[in-house]
Amino acid sequence: MNNGKLDRLIDIMKILKSKDGCPWDREQTHESLKRYLIEETYEYLEAVDLDDKRHMCEELGDVLLQVVFHAQIASENGDFNIEDVINGICEKMIHRHPHVFGDVRVENSGEVLKNWEEIKKKEKGVIDQTSVLQDVPKNLPALMRSYKIQQKAAQVGFDWDNPADVFAKIREEIDELEAEYTKSDKNGIEDELGDVLFSVVNLSRFLKVYPELSLSQSTNKFIGRFEYVEQRASELGKKLNEMTLSEMDVLWKEAKMHK
Image (tube, rainbow, N blue to C red; front, side):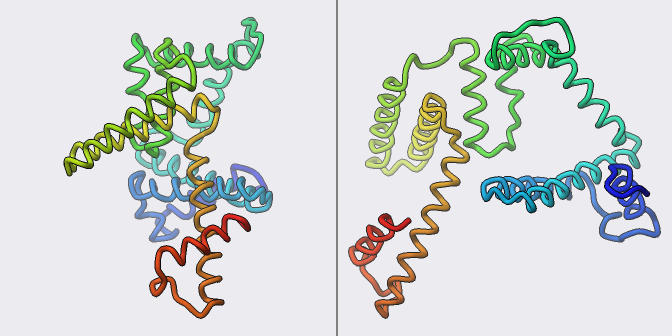
């Protein structure tokens, strides 16, 4: 086995999955491994957020391991192998970049994306835009899925004209949510809250902000500020559950000045 080569990783996985290999690895299936691929992907994204190059390299290796693991399972089942995976993505990249590997001319990245979507639709035999929306995976995080679906609807002109319209729509949806709340209608509240979130995602597109990342940043910011509040409370000889909301709010305003 050669150091630093994909073949080495493939050989290691074959050994692990062999009868003399690892009992845990032999028991795994595509279904059982789903969570690990998701976890490793998010760990890589966190390393990117931290701009930690060493961990980025490490986490990409973990993601690659999952790809090789799934390919080995498929190979043992007679479905496909790692060579099929690599050949498939190579052919896809060549086919979807005719401006690089063919004679198509483009002026900017916008035209590249437009061509990409058209080629993708032809590959999948898609004949209408509804099928394009339905093709977005249902198990994506909800914010990410709604963002992608709205993007694809906008490709055929189904979109707002400007951000002001979206702001107005958000206010309208919040009013409708409040109306359902006053009626204590749980189903209505759930439905209208979804509409509010969907409208906020729409606004994020117009503002060119990716909602999944934006919400993640705000969540991390909340944790940082909460930590400050708890530490300051401790310095004052208090526990949070012994403080009033007004007292905690004073510390929260302090936290906002520091974090």
